[in-house]
Image (cartoon, rainbow, N blue to C red; front, top):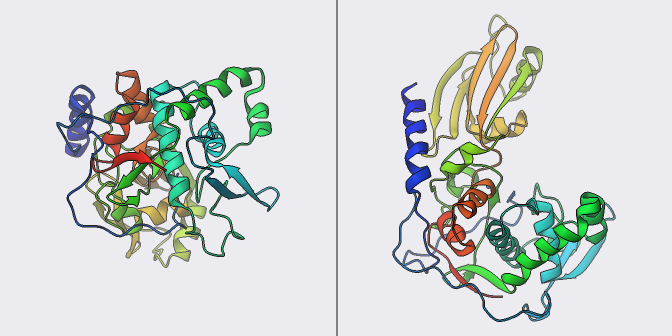
Length: 344
């Protein structure tokens, strides 16, 4: 209860005072980066520096600001690798990853994150994707919808939503985020626990721009708090595979260790220490920020947030945009003020 009270107080304060860090270079030593196989679909650092200015030059098309850069994309349905002009790819990625009806500044922030991740992924897949840089599977890379799929998704709203997505892409055309001289790994997720998670806790890589920041607006999402009920037999069966001991038809719950952001780092079940992200995977939980209750009727996970919690919170970006933040401010905040905005 003490933790919950403190968490609620944190949300109340940061809704009013949450800072927006500007985009800038870091003076820290270089850290390692996650491998390309790791999924992306995710204490704020203050700075007095001004955020980068939005482009003011008219951009006639979405393909002329990326120097002919193309994305080699593996389509899951066909198994084929397609070469897609970068800005056209970003339109499809944005349409897949964020509601087109959301605030224009949130859409611009998401478009920049999607573009950056596409450039970051180039040449990192090795032979695992038939020569592609990435797939259209959001669980391992990021989603993508071609024009036909967008028409099917939006129906009568296609023209309106297509324009909203294309406007966001045009406004940020060719822009990517860098950490020092390297393209950044712009992880993002749907909703955080209220504080984003460190990449180190999820993937083992400590990146200066993927460390915890406040995202109090996430608590306003209707999907912020979700429950997952698991029948007792299924609960025991899945934990048994993880070598948890069942004694007299019960699994004991031992010490629970939380990360700085309130996600479950480790939990002892049936004498076995298990990582929170492993339980999230095994039971398909919305996030690893959860509490667990077990009764004779089954187990209930009460979860906060949706996704791995690393990097930019999409709902948090929407909340910041609604409160007047620019897309540069949103990116600066969620990536800790450690990145610089530049061209492909």
